[in-house]
Length: 409
Image (cartoon, rainbow, N blue to C red; front, side, top):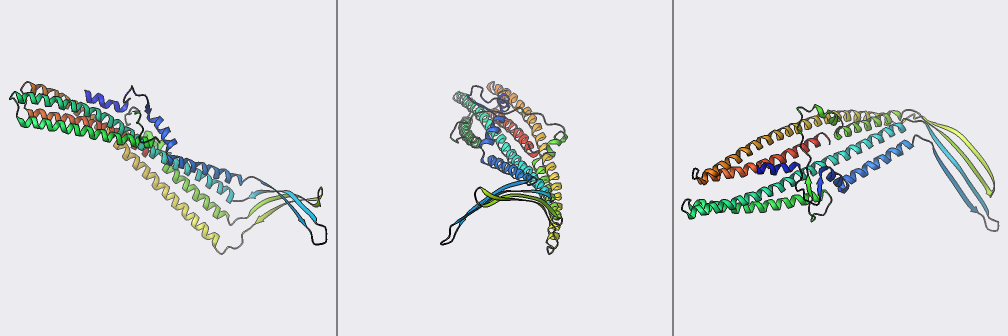
């Protein structure tokens, strides 16, 4: 049937003769490059990586150079010069705060990566929905054009019957009204298509006034019987990764608070040259180690440790809650996806029946075996079923996109 073939274009090339056909994968890459939100999340991830590198550097020796020069004198006496220069090095020997800081920075980096994936997933859902809406609107306007043509043919047929005295004037006026309604609906479909194309261009970072490219949606796969095949994706969900990172940050804070009661040790070394007249100079060196042991802090260390352990318990509860929420949301989206797929079959069967009945009743009406009202009702039902089938296809594409977002893709 014409409408069935028309809807099939939702999952194939909309117009093979177009100069540019944009696939969903290419559009996602273009959108992530153009979106300010995606770029901001990527910059946050880059900053978190730099902070992690800085935290790791604290575990290694540090070396610094210093130099000074001064000229001094008094009235009536010659002036004198003095200078000094040297090297200083420090190596941490024992410190609980430095390894905990590295673990905290690594967890912050994972949290930033999860935040980027969260932003990308939301934008991918918006893009897929815009793809489906735009393709659906283009097919709807094609279907509206066919309906408009059929309405004009029906009006001419009723006018001939009316002029021959075989049909009443009410039927003629109703057919004229149906044609005008179809014209108005065609204009409305055109307006909606333009609005959707503007929205798509904005997502892609293109000018709103630019012509939207032809679109290609990937084929829709059949949903599996249960959710178990997506267990790996659920474990890697950005919400769970973010909650795990928050728990790791809280654990690192607890380790830092617990380690504040322990001694800290570091090794220091220096070598220095100094003098009053270049190049004559004296030099000296020193090697040593220092230990710091906290003795009394007025209960601050104990309070910090208690607060850090409480935050760790809170982060653990938040992780368990996030795990349940992710699974429930994924299951809801999965069931909606299966429902949308089943409804598409129902809509397809209803459309096939409506097309067959419309063809039969039209033949009967032309032969005088059916009334005008029966023919009109069948025509209206056919148009309704065609639009319903297009809507079901769009709903299937959006429900699949919603499921992808629910599992963190």
